[in-house]
Image (cartoon, rainbow, N blue to C red; front, side):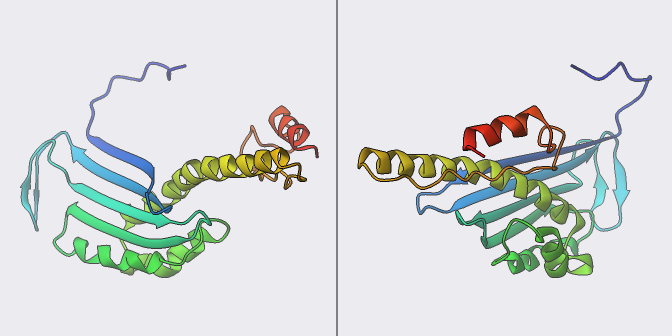
Length: 191
């Protein structure tokens, strides 16, 4: 369902964000994000001179390479368009995220390693969404592998390992402790 009709208005700013998850041939996963900000009007900028309407004010890339265990193996950032000449100097600092697990405490670890003046606000903002993309990319691969292992064990006449897909209870309306979704998932898991 679309939003209601807005009041009369004119567009001033556009932010595009694209994120993709990839399964690499070496078994690792790349989670990539791209962010672009543009204005509908031109303006003067001390470091870049004139930035015309539609020309990127921000154009930034971020790649997390993650293992199946959800631990970041490497992080690479690049800033093609920034409002200030100094901004691209923050990109190499994001390599400090190597070794950080995506899970509880992730936001705190990001703040400790690339927070404040060490990092870039826009790149840092992408990381929470990239963590979600990592779960959406890697989770189904892990679940499929676990299902295949259970099916193989059954085919060999062995007792299959238990099916233990974590239910993120309390993280949204659908996963409320008393929701029909949680009840169905628990029933399917035999809980």
